[in-house]
Image (cartoon, rainbow, N blue to C red):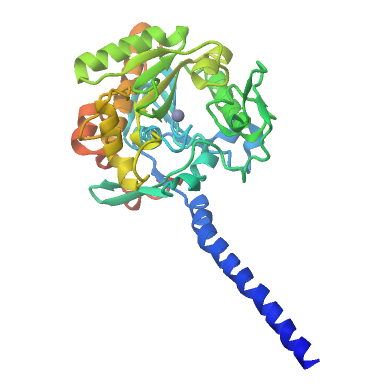
Length: 394
Ligand SMILES: [Zn+2]
């Protein structure tokens, strides 16, 4: 009897110790992910913000889900055209989100109205890619301290949209796409009111564009230096003329490259294709090179995310394997964000020249040279110094 009791105690202990160790490991690994998922980012309502809407007002199936997100409205002093700016379609390409936040916190709209969605794929911005060792946050240095942002993933979290199909059948064209694209908000356009969550996100933006009669839609991204569609504006037939004029003008006036890529008509689900095919807006997808996303690089550190410097890419550049010039100074965040603010402003200017009855005139947003010189942080407001009610959490 005594012997068997001792043996039982031993067996229980032999099971309890590894179980406790496993639980400890799960908590140690899981708690930072849980905190990241619930970490909210303050955005200060700049001098031009006149309202903050929710995307669920245009797509009711988003209400109460983590697909819902803020839509900042900057209604101008005088009437004019309307533009939509989207960042974080891919939440591991933060230059788009930062350009969008700079518009919200700095823009003064003189003619027309801006709609800005800085965290378009909110679920993806609360997701990560642990297998690739992604950092969960990054800090941007400002004049008053550090401003912290979530670093997300390309796709929505499976916690929000699950399970994935074997193959994603695009709506409405029935083109067969990769299973993972059902969580990629640059494959789920134009979306459905009752589709999977990410289709409800893109449907919300389509409805906003249709109801508010948006003229220009700018979807801002980053892309690998080893991927040919980088450092460019992707545009379909309807917007290619404005894209070309914007590209030539920034090159001549501001000295940086940004070529134009035609949107392929046979590849479905992309913003630059479906927005124009299913609504009134002229679509533009902006890409700036983000070395962090390339595969043959050193560790994926926050520093690398910000400065874009990597010795492996430098040696590949010497072997002519990259699609952009790449030197010792890498491709820093301020260059990427500056390109995006300049190209966006130039698209508005070219649209306004071509469509005089619907001008979009914005001031207060820094262009390329200013962002490169002063850094991104110079144009980020201090949430602690905002007026009461002047901060919106995202
Ligand atoms: Zn992207």
